[in-house]
Image 1 (cartoon, one colour):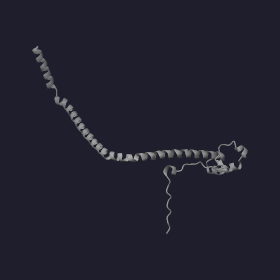
Image 2 (tube, one colour):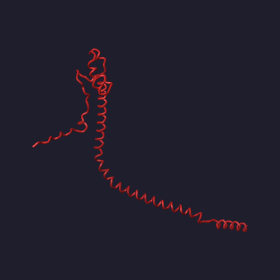
Image 3 (cartoon, helix red, strand yellow):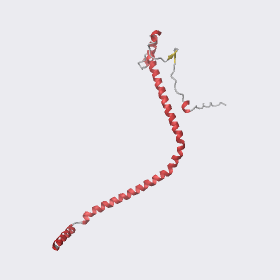
Image 4 (cartoon, one colour):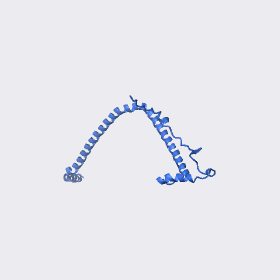
Length: 170
């Protein structure tokens, strides 16, 4: 048994002596050194980001907190603006419907200059009697006069505008 152990030991010694440790271990050491260098760079970057983050927090949190007083006013202004846009949109839809009715009354289908100028005049000349006018669609006329669509007043949303002062002539 001692001879077998001695043979095994000599075989392992031959294997270890034949192995080129520099050739096998040097790439591992190089990779480990590269990883350590990258880890060091990452740590430096991380500390830089932390320092910048702390600076931003110190500088801007105070300004954000001071703005919170104006936030309610800003929110109210945004709500008023949204209501204003909704009102203008509704008014625009009403005006478009009024224009559609006027176009039907005047038989305007041609939007060229000739169509816009001559078709309404021609329609007026060939107008039907009032008895058949009852079957016509909604009209923009009230007692023969044009009834404009009521639209918003900007004073309701933005306050009354100050009248511009007239220059004084000396």
